[in-house]
Image 1 (cartoon, helix red, strand yellow):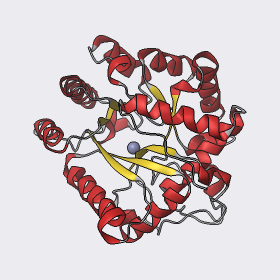
Image 2 (cartoon, helix red, strand yellow; image 1 turned 90 degrees about the vertical axis):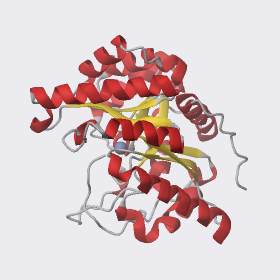
Image 3 (cartoon, protein in one colour; image 1 turned 135 degrees about the vertical axis):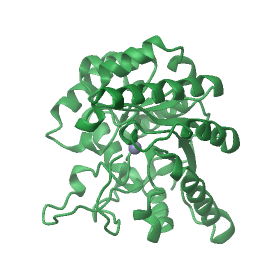
Image 4 (cartoon, protein in one colour; image 1 turned 180 degrees about the vertical axis):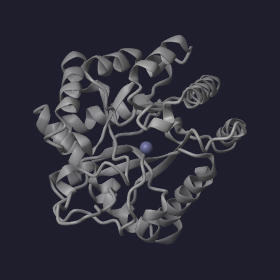
Length: 313
Ligand SMILES: [Zn+2]
């Protein structure tokens, strides 16, 4: 995730379509961020209406781990004690994000391990390597990224948890570390979140056992390299290799952009329906079939047997 400008979140006026009856899983969100604080319950209800049945909050810095727990509790209360509102079930993943490497302290690693023992998140993430900004590319920053990545892979292995990978302009480094490490995605699961690599890299991550996380970027007709990489992976491995994510408040789907605004609205979980619809169109697969497949893929990525819900009539 990267920071977006603070605006009241809202849905694009055209978001509700026929996909609203089809159950989908948002495998990567930052729905605990303050930008959603004022209307989180309303947005969660809208997510449900657009088909989202499960939603994962993904960690990036240690100081916000408990904020994810609080968000989970807030939404659980809205779904049960308060109004019995239909909203997605919320899960937490915890990890120390490579783009925030300068913020992380060495003590954050044992604190992460303690959080995992106490709160039992469903995955370690987001973790990985990022060389997008110059400050992340210095020798010391790269060494620290590598150390934190390996330490968190160790934790995933010892806790038998999947990892959620964040990789930006560092696919080769990341693959090298993964190949040298005992972490086995075939066994533990895992997601290469907001996949942004090329065709060969897509194949390499799938070969290792990772699912490729597809965001609203795929809805951009100009995202040719991304579309080629995802298409190439699907041609070789089938639709088994994909999962859906919004990465909200980032990665606003293309059709939600409002060119008249200098600052765009934050992305929201309900917009996952756009990503789903795009994949259905790209691969000419009917929505029911695709929804079943993606549901199964999410279960495999997290090693959780979520039951496919009955359709809403
Ligand atoms: Zn993220």
